[in-house]
Length: 95
Image (cartoon, rainbow, N blue to C red):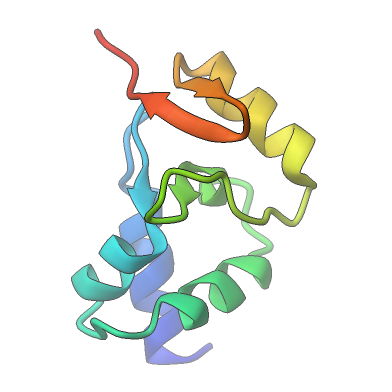
């Protein structure tokens, strides 16, 4: 596994339930500020169910892709209290 992918997985694994990061934020935290597409590609290759890839979204609030399908990603985010309207996240969960 590449160092980049390891960094991405480590960051995404730490996203708490009810929260999310954008692909751009994950890339920046991994030290590769312009590698947002590479973040998506890395997450698409994830085989570890303990890494919550569905908690990573587009910068404009749109859901983005998910290996398990967009409907499943939306369902998982809603289950954690994320509010989604018309395919966009409108707010984070409040705890």
